[in-house]
Image 1 (cartoon, rainbow, N blue to C red):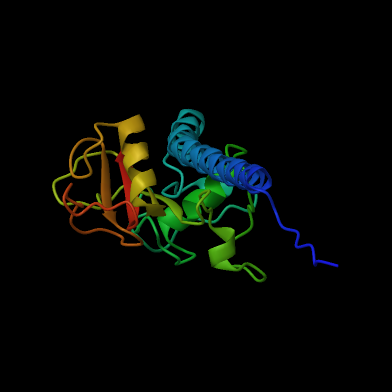
Image 2 (image 1 turned 180 degrees about the horizontal axis):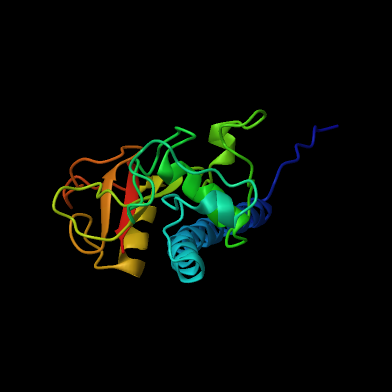
Length: 218
């Protein structure tokens, strides 16, 4: 008797390849949708933080974080003792500070206790608080911060909201959505990721794979 060899036909192989292609296409499309949602979330954070500030100022006639009378207004609130002069009307301290007594850090406690933002309203210098966990993060795991000190020389604004750990492709989308799409001009500008300040990223320096800090002036 002759041995009979069996194998896949060309039609069967073609069907399998089509199925694999559909699965890969679905995965890639799903990842694209996830990234798009994260970018929208980051854009929303810029708008949310500015709303916190305007809401706090409207209610208390003071800048959150800089509020010298916050302990009398909000139970458990702490007046800042570093990062600037409390009560001078200017939010001071680096946007990415981790010093628990800085104005730019206590900003988050003040807006949380005022019920403008969600999150842990405990004293960040108190027992049981891990400062890096206590501070807010964006959808890409980067810091979200605010300061009244311009992160770029000659860039004017009352306050500046910054977020880091953003890939160049996403940073570009954010700049286009909020401003002019150019990393070194306008009300939205890019810096090296994680830096408190420095030089703006030029269009030729911006790469899709690089990580950046995106700051918006208000």
